Length: 337
Image (cartoon, rainbow, N blue to C red; front, side):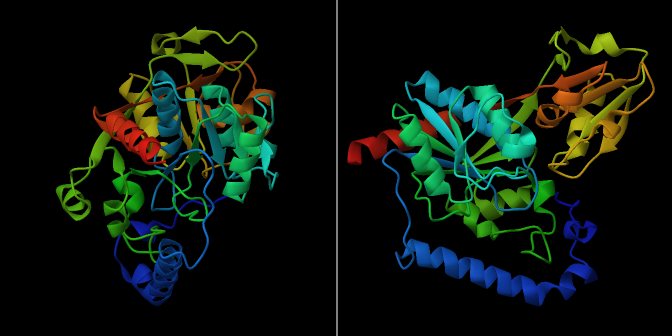
């Protein structure tokens, strides 16, 4: 279970500066590894269908799962039959294996299981992304494009389109690990096909990564779904006057809490580490109290959810032009194949 990110990642202070020698080593090794793949010194694996990678350059959640759901919808509306590969973080399966929609998050990971249920796409997980992709294509030969969730640094898997999802708060002090949260430097964002910005980017950051390939994203939701067998849907007005506990085991729980509060709800905030393995005791509040959680947490809590447990599903709204850029890139790849 990942711990919360260190507070010093948010500023360029003494604690981070003391780790800069290690960060410089990490950054150099990362750049060397990327250079080896880009020059063919280390072999990459190309699947027989196009691959679209959705990832980021920092440790921490930036909104990749809603982007994958949005992307799958775009691809389907334009005649593609997509499949999804993922690491399966937080699950016990090493893979490669297929994710059943009725599987357990503890086995397959919360995000792959959620994507399987949200999209209805075939989903395969594994440390070895090319092997996971090959397994998916073997089981679903009609699939004609692979979406790799959180796959930017998995260079063994050759890709046709790269999408970076960026949240400036998650970028923190913009120093490499372990002095800061960056897996790769900001210059990496100039190399991807498009950047999807979750939240407002400062002028300084936009200048450093370029503005021509940046598209804004917001997560929207209006209704809540009961986690019991009824699957009943309600609006925020249903909870007026009641004690509401908001639970979030995601990269940026504050964003979830703020969204609920913007809907007029007075919530008691309960942040958990990203990918937290929920247990019944986490939901043990006073009888009659409302428990609201993210979709990512709901797939883990549904098996033992008690009365008044609710999921708040959200969908990504992404600036116009992003879909066109992805489709154009895929179309060009088809023509040159």
